Image (cartoon, rainbow, N blue to C red; front, side):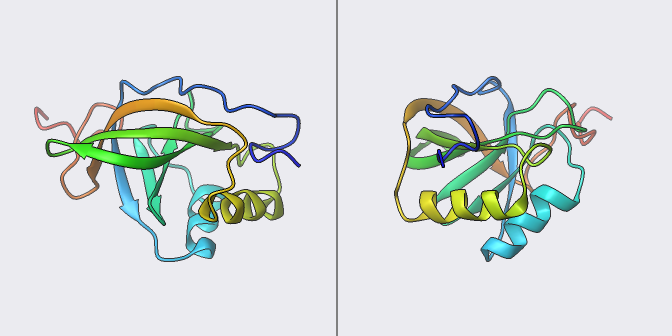
Length: 137
């Protein structure tokens, strides 16, 4: 099985690296899977688990797709330099596949890597038009 899900041998480059992402730290794999598979999140909402960001890189809240980015270094307050090392698409894969992908990525087993720069803020600090928490409102 490819680390990016069925039928994917290479990492697809992030579609929305220009977004200002928010993230919530999750404590374990079960919490991460439940968050991605059982809830609907704004397009900027993401998760941090074991030095990886699971960034919502989709076009629609109804069809989430997460780019998995390992953090190589930070810049300034919220700048991230990293590598996209996988993708998860909860709308088309079973949780058992997602669990295997998360375990492989957490162990450093990447199918491919693609450099990426982005902004990721802790949830408590974040506000944007995508989540409706815009400061101007």
